[in-house]
Length: 366
Image 1 (cartoon, rainbow, N blue to C red):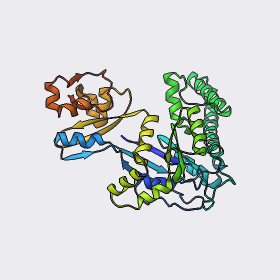
Image 2: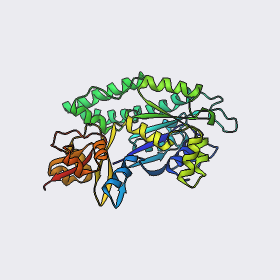
Image 3: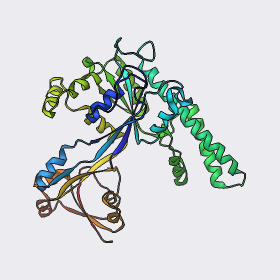
């Protein structure tokens, strides 16, 4: 399991350029006019994790298999998207299918690149997008309400509870209140998740700045940062202009050299993925052996049997125990055998909560 991240924003904010940089491809048409992207472009990229190759070297593995992340480049939304403006309904449907939303915001001035407004104002741009997402959710809720109201006449308590929850969600959205992290019963959570509302998805702001602002941001990105902090959202500062330059280099070494010259410690891909993992509460554990070393993505607080189920459902069904070594111990001691001899390899049962970097073997019987 990796995760799927939808890239959204107004037209001409750098979404497609960013997508091409993240996926190291030219799939997305980066053009200076609205709706260059009609159907969503999808790019699958390996999640960069230096721990994977280190483990593979120690385990003398024949193959290394990373975990993956899918980026979905969704066409630029405009005011009125929720009512179909600019093919909006079609674009909004794509957003419902992703796990998280990366909202690209224009934080640079350039008279050669058109903007849907007369001036650069990232907060106004964000508000335009968020309003359309909320309106789309309100329409979803109203349609569900209309459907349930017909059935409510039979006095079904569960349906009444669902209608009450819909009314609560509508009220929150109309008052610009968050509909995330609500205190719900187990039954309500199941219904809430089934609605697949856009505003329940974790959001990350990507500030597209000019080349000179890539290290410290600028007055525009500061505004976005303040807003993100107030919402408990993350931001990442990138420069699509720099990414276009980096994309011209063939070798990885040349790309890293340019990053170094610019004073950047990590690639845009790594910055975005790290932020994505953070907002989705994801961690990575590893399996390591002669055949392969592999990374597996799971949510924080996942138990050992559930983690085993990521490999195969039989592993979860017939789970007996997990043999676990912390990554640092595995590296320090030079592998599984030495970790076992040093007492660092632990036998963990069904209640064990997997930690980021755990190197694991699962014993099962089906």
